[in-house]
Image 1 (tube, rainbow, N blue to C red):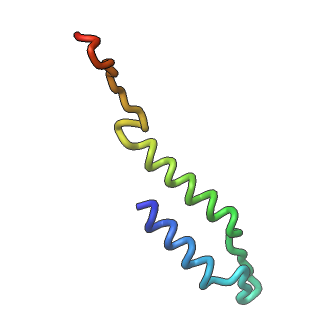
Image 2: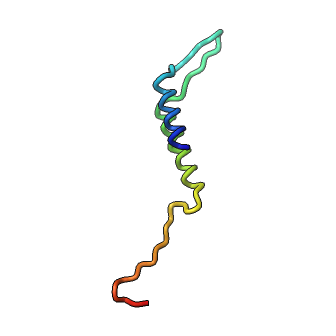
Image 3: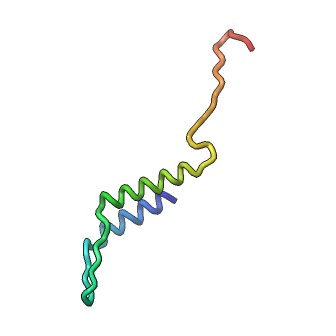
Length: 67
């Protein structure tokens, strides 16, 4: 999902314009830096939603140490 969002953000940034004015109403697109921050935020939210939360527990047993 994050890849799709990042691809959409990049495509919009490349193809879009910075500001538009129509009938006295103007709008300005987000800067590229803000778009990158948003993509990183969404990727972090997706990673935090996973069950393991990036933690892995492993029991290390040295060779010849026995149980």
